[in-house]
Amino acid sequence: MFAPVYLDHNASTPPDPEVLEAMLPYLSGQFGNASSRHEYGRAARWAIDEARSQVAAAVGAHASEVVFASGGSEANNLLIKGAAACLKPGLLAVSAIEHPCVIKPAEQLCKRGWTLEKLAVDANGRVDINNFAMIMTRKPKIVSVMLANNETGVLQDLEPLAEHARMAGAWFHTDAVQAVGKLAVDFRRLNAAGVHALTLSAHKIGGPKGAAALVLDKRVELEPLIAGGGQERGLRSGTENVAAIVGFGVACTLAAERQAKLAKPLLEMRRRLEAGLIALGATLFGQAAERLPNTVYFSFPELDGETLVGHLDRAGYAVASGAACSSANPEPSHVLRAMGVDPELARGAVRISLGAGNRKEHVAGFLETLRATVAGLRRLTAMTA
Image 1: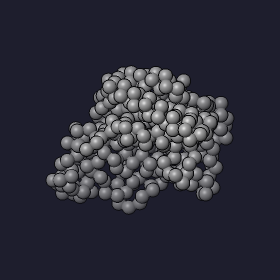
Image 2: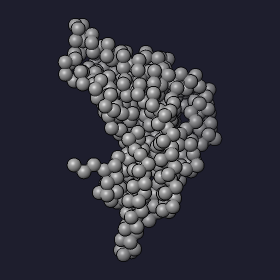
Image 3: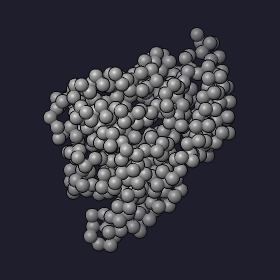
Image 4: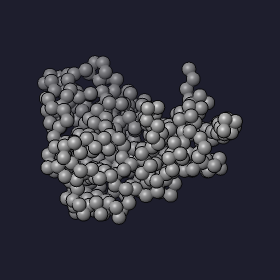
């Protein structure tokens, strides 16, 4: 079976063999419901408690601060909608480059009396501190700024932002889904600065799909999205996905252990990619900002990103387009629009996100294939012009 070289780790990662091995017993003999009182249920409850401790340890939190959810989208919705439900409607501020699972629930709250302000970013995708400080004078009640952007890989300096938000009296949340496993993330330090909640997801770090967590300061009151049997301290009812949660815990342990060692080769490959892309005439986005070591986001001015991604896939390289994947919505990336990128250039955006399984030979092969593919598309464009 043909298998392209995988260069899309920000979308999802291959499950680690150790994760799969840890999950298997809970997909067969250890099938108990963690709410049951008998031995099968106690075994499931122990496994969840162990995983909770593993997730907490990976981000410098306490196990009692970890609330399991089905994915990063649910965890982000739980924080935004859950916190809003416990407050009188007011101002909600999120960065203009957030993932849709932050922006969309924030927009929904506008129908319930809330006012939404999207925090401006500069040309490199960093939150504009002057704009941020000005909005904080309006006393927002909830603020959400992601730690690492899923498209550009650009990092935010959260601590000064959180300090501003704390002085304004806001609950401050960060979507750290892309950062965990690629950077050292310390919730205790962030919490001391004023970050009250943090989201992470299993399938971004070699774990299974279907498990994520909201790490939550206990002072934050949330109304649950899902009511029922009262699991997860009453914040997320429903029978727990024990196997996925177990895999999540192991993935967090492995990610924390391997992060420092993995960062150097990823950064070296990223630099090789960037040098090759610049030589081919590509524009790199967020290049002047501090970024994740694995992420490169680029565009060729005259080429469509979706077309380029399709050709690369057929040539043996799996990458992602920054443009909307639906033909019904041809708008370019909202992240690039917020950065002030020309719409035509933004429509050509392509993201490469490296992972532990990639090697420098993959980078060299990709650049050679890209060179030939771009040359071919340019010839075709010239013929049809």
